[in-house]
Length: 123
Image (cartoon, rainbow, N blue to C red; front, side, top):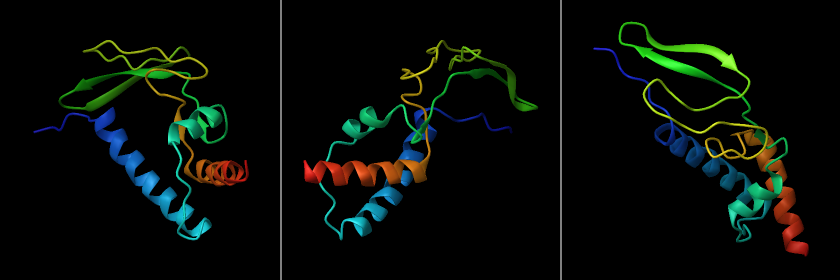
């Protein structure tokens, strides 16, 4: 029996949790186990249009064939997260409902978060 594709929050939430666990471990070393208290959304909105995130500006319509599995369609510059079964949100440059600021670049995100937290402590 073929397995249907899984995505969306079912895949994104545990991946973000794993990334943030690694980030927290690195921050713990940077700040000698005394990570400043902060609201992550403040950092994200301050750094959304930076190298910490890859902006999603296009996409593919994916259909599912029980015998072949997922079949990606042609890339479209005005991307969306629509499927053959459900409507979604269109993506454009900048913040999008379907992707937020985009896919995280973990190394750059950590570097920028370390700098941002250090600047927050001194202000």
